[in-house]
Length: 176
Length: 329
Image (cartoon, rainbow over all chains, first blue to last red; front, side):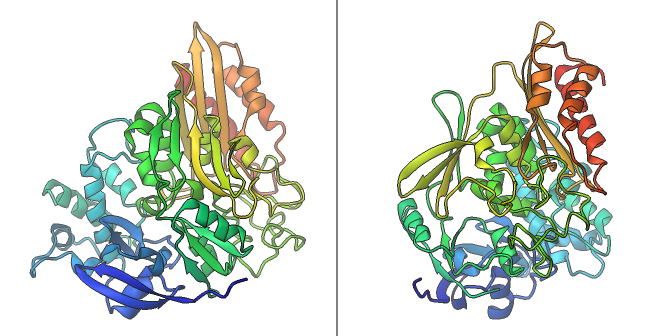
């Protein structure tokens, strides 16, 4: 068996900035963000893709950063909670979470917000969900059942779900 | 996690050659299952061959009105594809009922077929498991097995296959295209998953290094109606405790074609061929559906804590077929 290098150089664009990292292959994207780039907004909850606290955007799509190997993300654009606001102006989904009190302890919130941002984009594209009666329908009406289904990959152990649904619904209506 | 090497092959041929040459190499697609199993110590590859960048993600109509799904198409991209939603809606229904938006964005079609059981003894390396360590024994038979198999299991392993997508594909008579150094071959999904027997560690009919390149789905029969229904212990983001994919054609008050696959009951998506045979050329009714389901489930061998699956799956088959054929439950 050939001896393989255990580390590689990885280039990522994170929140608009080019980053070059020398990483052990075992490093997940989540650990690269938190431990190597000091972006601790993305949280390590379960570390097994079950809770959604680590949700980030990879090339604009939501993903669990804890299950992505950083080395396999070569050249991708990553957006974390730290990269959502522009020029000191909160992203409309961030503002909606504040306005509607969509959290208690706040631990799941960065993942909830990143997930919601991508989910609103998915709905805008007319993508169906398991709550959509007819998967062939062209448009999505984001009622509470649709929002709950589409956000089910993000757990909140405080149980702030009621206000999270309200916040996401408000952001959707505001055209976030 | 054990240390490992990482390579990104230029094409499928290089990927296959690299993996054939190293018995401890594994393909990395989306990684949602493999990376998790590596963290748990269940998988300890020495080399990951990252195929995610290979051009195997297309979803295309075939000349005979079927569908060709590239092995690296992400679960989301299949579920929301216009061809799939219009012509093969039960594939969308099955995919959307599984995992979360985040996981579906990452997980691939080929990886979905190859995902491992979520049996808690398989994923816990401190416990005996014949699938993980042949000959070690099976802790599930006497342990926590509420969501284990009732059909086709053996004394060696009672684990279920967790995929929703594969259940829908089974009902559509899908085929799997694989590449090896010898060339390309296709095999029926029904031959892809191996019976448990005394070798639960051998789950699929692939050699080490053979690469899934596509899933081929023939056109459903004319005028077919189809549906995927899933029962789980919470409303979303949970594995099935029972599911059914059904495709049915009724003409002139008679069932002309019916395909039924059930999920979360066996080590593979379970094609209910006894039930199908019993329904051939009969009039649709709740009673005929129940009798057909009973015929299939007469072969069930439930464990201490999963006998509930028999009435659950029976009722699921009846309700789904009644819905599709428009007869009262």
